[in-house]
Image 1 (tube, rainbow, N blue to C red):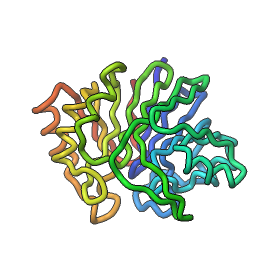
Image 2: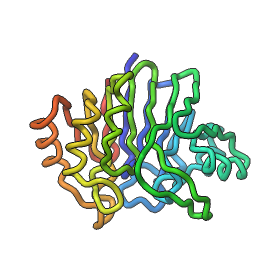
Image 3: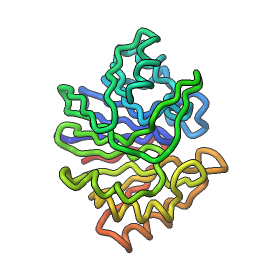
Length: 226
């Protein structure tokens, strides 16, 4: 079955097969690069890497409107659940299963406190969507254990931060791509604000020269199908 991935800007993506839509890190309101308004996005399930404002974003409003359950690490899930939203609360290493597949929380080296003050541990998201394996790295820095994520489950698509300052930069991300070994890498979390400016075309050239991965650069609103 064909999966369509759509980049909505910053670190926000949707995965869809036409009937089901998985929404990741829906920071749309206040995002100068957002490809769609929060009121217009659809979601069957919402997945969060962590609770910083540029990731939790419009989660509660979208979940209320669509009825989509939210998957987030336990402390963050509890905060979302206090808003009357259905929330699944795995910790690192935990897996939540759905009709469309599953999501597993894996480590990411970063920090996180929500706008409401809830401290939570950041995660990466290993997602099996109808048999396509997508790895959203979250806001991680470079660390050697990234190579363990795809050791048992080969990764089709890696959604990788490259903007630097708050995450790894495009140079460290080349090494991360080598550790992960995904078939295709899609850069994100760059050029939203001046502090996270990066050259995605240079990143693409460097990754494809140094690894066996293909890099696809998407502008906000563009899609990639598998």
